Length: 521
Image (cartoon, rainbow, N blue to C red):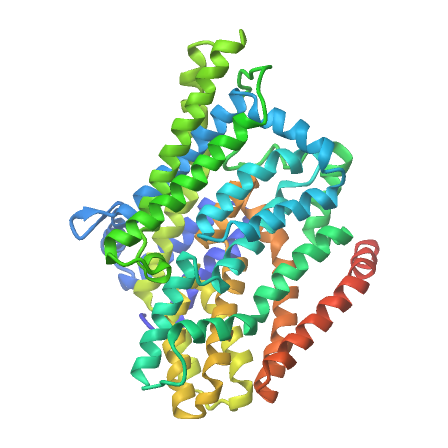
């Protein structure tokens, strides 16, 4: 069943179940079971053995602790505890009141969130969670739905990381490009200069970011997002209380009436400084070089997140104990409450992440990505159509596998092979299309860890986030596809960018009218 059309069944079944049932764990469970059955050739005992091995591999790999996954889980739990103590200290309440006086409109709150998403570009995981923590008090006060917040976070985290050379994504991609250039003896540019030339060609990134600002400023809501936004405006309910919401504190916490903005800001600042500092430290220790690019290429992201989270937690606790001495509302019991409620708030996200990692492992064993890549490699493509076709194939691959990085690793070398065998001038556009398509597919996939963490950071029900973001992601993909078509046919980056910008302007002018017409029909 490996590397055949049947390998598409588990991801498609899981995604279809998600859409029909809106129950993410059940849907992922069905996908996991179907993947296990295919790998075991329908032997029941072997199926459960394969699933157990995939699950166990999340925590133990090769007889050693799988630090990447375990540290990500620990970071999530720590972040939940930080959030609880920031709330208990009165920081979230004070920050919401402060922001309400300065950010006067719903559009302003959304644009501020988008700007934060662009500024914090070091890593997509960190971006999704940190921006959510800072922005949630502001967007809640302005009655912006959590689904809309999750969309803004998701559509500014990975898109910025994929075009930033000083990020965990950028370093990984530059390393891949370097290997491709070496394999084909291409000396016209270095891996770093190739990455910089590819960035403007990543039309999905510019379309996705442009749509965030346009929809925020113009108040363009369509599809299911319109329902969430209308409910938030009319009732003040920023999420559906009947649904599981990761990252949301379920029980009322004791809150200090003496809290200040600093009780929220300084733990977040400590989180940022601790994480970035740990990334620089782990990267330097790996290569013993002072080059920022080399450091970020070799940084240990999950370890850095854990260290940064612990540093942020220590600072949050310091401010909490300070508030204990100031406010009679707080006592020793609040310490236990903060830890328990903080951890409980993150458990839904942890469960989803574990199930998603399990199905991604099984899909990898089924070689779903390799099957899709093989279709591209074996087809007789018109060279001018290569960028748009690679964009769409990378989108399907990332959607089905839930991993943009996996799509990079499989499709970038294939793009290099095709370009080297036909016309090397198409190499950079082809690689740009792969990067763009992988981010697009990641935005649409309910099994994507980036999307899961965006839901968590925003405090949005995960399926609500996926369903509401889908129309925006598809709109961005349509715009990007036209841009890649123009790039492939003309060979001009400016032509592709120009088409992308023109279509964004047309959306800005006519999008709200079209959305209102669709809602009224």
